[in-house]
Length: 252
Image 1 (tube, helix red, strand yellow):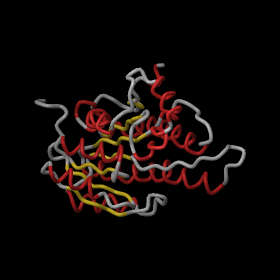
Image 2: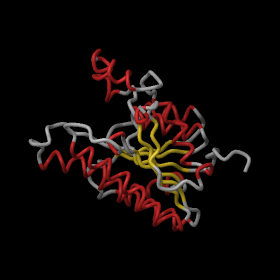
Image 3: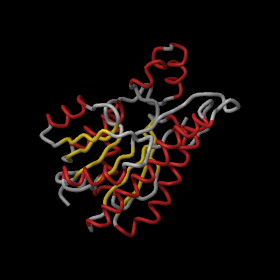
Image 4: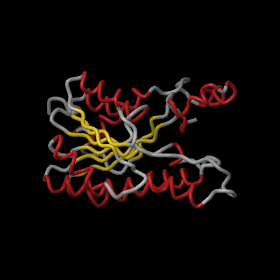
């Protein structure tokens, strides 16, 4: 095997890739040689431009991942546009903040639908395509520090991300025999649009940096190596793990 990290000829399907971590992972997969299908509600114009600048193909599917109704068509359109589905990155997710004592049905369901329900059924649809191809594939779920910790005021997010870690294990157990590797990445604190308010808060920023041994916020490019590893032949004997990419947050 000349380069176990080479993704030339592979097709990756990435959800929620218009900015931030999703964009960082999509670009990293393209840098490793993959063509990429980008799925989400927002137009990922910058991500498309960066992928195409690398000489790779990018295809966009506009879909509301708050519902799992479109998962079969997402997989079939990816196959028709780019030739298959070798890699799935379940990155799309949302968060709702409220005290657990006041949390509503609507807040609970909105988060669980995107973060867990659609993640599972899109994984199922992609796995069926991978099995049918006879080549297997790689499924990478995006978990969280709250797959390991409790947090506060985000009960549905914590429940969903704990569920992602659990689903990753059971799907690895069931689908390994088909040549499908299922693993997860748990990002720590990354400098993205979603964390801009935290970075701007001097007190919270200092508290966060004080706990990260690496002494800095992660950059979206920092997650690229982990996703390429789990998407490539380099991880062929890796199954069911949730890999923290956190600058040492959990070690502290």
